[in-house]
Length: 240
Image 1 (tube, helix red, strand yellow):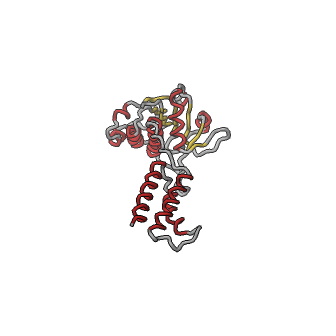
Image 2 (cartoon, helix red, strand yellow):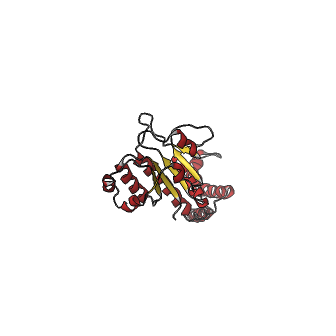
Image 3 (cartoon, rainbow, N blue to C red):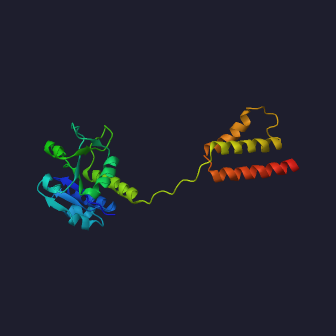
């Protein structure tokens, strides 16, 4: 499944970051990205890091402004730790899920600021919503290529979940009455075997023995199998 999810890098300065970001995008099955006024000129270091992703590196489009890079996008998320009134702050996982959910409506974009100062105030205002990686306060900043990989991974996970076949229906669970029948049969069988002879009504031994079966959430088929097995064992004990 190929969805129109675009990664927009504002003023990228470091060629190594571009190479590592290209590899990260290809790792996750993505290839739509735009560099807005890139400052990295020599792409030799980028090619050394774009292992098996040279095609993604070469396919990067250039734009002069953020407006040009996202003009056709129906939803734009900026990566910034700033809090702006009226804009949601989404976790990376929520961003990945919503990017995939909105993509059928049209292209969606995730915007990254430059390595030194991030997004400008005007660029933040241009975005519909914001997202930041919940890093530890001791080291809050994150490398650009690492950020691209993290968000690309979340998009990949969301894409796989969206395309996964529906889960198989759950088997019919045993009712409380059916569980009570199993417990009663276990009580009778253990009594016939001499294990619970000295216990009084309300005894804890039976309750403790049956507790794991109750916790296991038996299916109706399993409950019936237990009943059949316990009845057979009780018959053999009483005949002996």
